[in-house]
Amino acid sequence: MTDPEIRRRTGGRSARVRQAVLDATLEVLGDNGFDQLSIGLVAARAGVHETSIYRRWKTRERLIFDALVENSAAKLPTPDTGSLRTDLIGFHRSIVAMVDSPLGAALLRAMAAGGEGPELAESRAEFWRVRLDATRVMLDRAVARGEIGPAPDPELVLEILTAPIHFRKLLVREPFAADYTEQVVDFVLSGLRWTPPDGR
Image 1: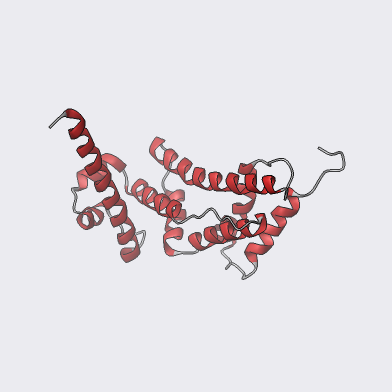
Image 2 (image 1 turned 90 degrees about the vertical axis):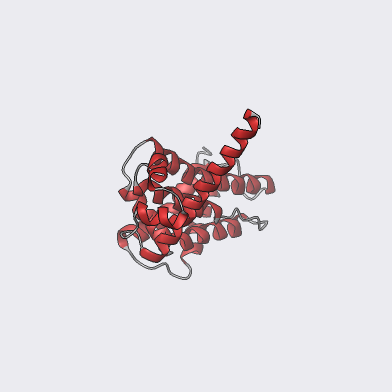
């Protein structure tokens, strides 16, 4: 067997083990909850040694965060309805559904409990990069259709769209009203379409 073949097999197995561990983490979270999840339970469910998990993820919180970030990224669509308003409504609703689910609540807890460090910073950056890329695509399409003027800052639009969700979920802890998404999206759109008096 050649060296390249060995590397391909190793990489493939490593990816499979990583996915098995992340899947097992989500399963254990669903069965036992955030507080009762342990590396040992995940290792047993995934069929790997605990040391393999500690070597890659270092801490329980980083493992949970990674699993939840990957899960949420896979379930986040980039709507293409032909209208910026309905695109943003679909996008916003998917985020509301995520944070309002048990796994979404666990992700918010992992974000708060995970501390700092390069591994966690990388996962956090990936979490927001996926959302930022989707926002940029929707805004670029809207500009091309003539719905809005020159492309606004997608990062600012994403912040304005998602900040109310986290505020309501984490701070005031109030349920999301049936028309909550439409209210937020229409507020954002009114800002995107507004022109200051001096034209800036």
